[in-house]
Image (cartoon, rainbow, N blue to C red; front, side, top):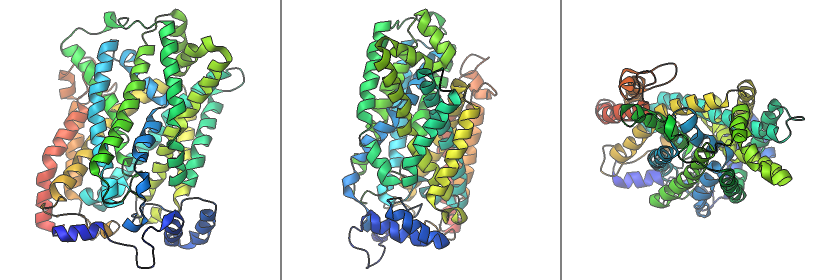
Length: 516
């Protein structure tokens, strides 16, 4: 495919009957036609502002350049939430790291995770496709289905942690009248409503909600200081410098990396309506800072709160996990503190909206039988699933968060490497393929067969297995990286390296033999 053909592929249009910028109303009405028997219902919902668009490609004349700054504000709002606080707390609670080492790990591993995720985000404007559909161009139709299954589980896992922590915090406001189950249900219901409506309402909400939540986080920093930070409090419990400490840093670093890269499988979903000529660097840096600044700032807050040695605060954490500790930190402000606690509990909605919306999109990406079912229906299915999971797992938040984020980093690592190698090696101008035939996004016979992507992913899994260090399994390399009893988690690093080394050769061979 020549460079000229590549540019044509990027600029394919919907037809002469669509104006230069069609607007969301025209786009959604046109998209409703693909739902067959559901079309009349979809058009009616459209009249009330519900998004009809699903996984289909956003054509160039359907894009809106005014949405560029949403990359910064949306990701800031998504991560400037209550669920980011416990990430930092895991450094001391699970890995006995001192405050200084916890901060250094968050900053370093966070930068790596944010950079990879931001790289994936740049593919949205270039293709007009959702992230799981973009995966078809490296791993084929079947590989795209496999990644979609992984992503559905990922977003449901994130959503479960959101509703549990939000429910814990709401229950801490009125422990005598609101049960933890009730708190979980309230957060879940409030999360699904804007996602049912769709993309535009989600972006509108995320554009502004970060500001008041950031103010509350600053209040928490101040009140925590009043209670007394003791940044050397955990130093006595930290493993000595060397192999054991390195293992703790690697294991916590994998969790931090996963907290950033968990957004990679949906990163292009929220900017695919930007024009194709949008600066990739602008998208990259807006996404990077939208992720990096709030996650680091608030995760380090979580680590700082764990340094408070006042017995009352320690007991609050032991009795009520992070939600209980935050409630105790706000106690000096009385009724206003309880109001802020409610605001914090509801802040998780900004995070959970993305999980919920992208769950519906990823279910549609499983294939045509799923894509013909309206997106909002799958959104409701996801809502039911994570609400039930949140109620069942409500007493085990820290365990769920720690194990989930560790495992999450494994598959997102090889997914990102494979997707980015496909783009920068094979799809670049002058590469073997020279660009994307974007009209082929839903035509299996014209997409790559996917053998290279699937094999490289499997090799990445092998890397994760030999390098991982979980409570239930420690790989042979992971065991060498830290304390033999606990190991050091090298799972995501080896998953990325194994897949990154194998994919270019396998893909070159696939193109030579299959021609696509």
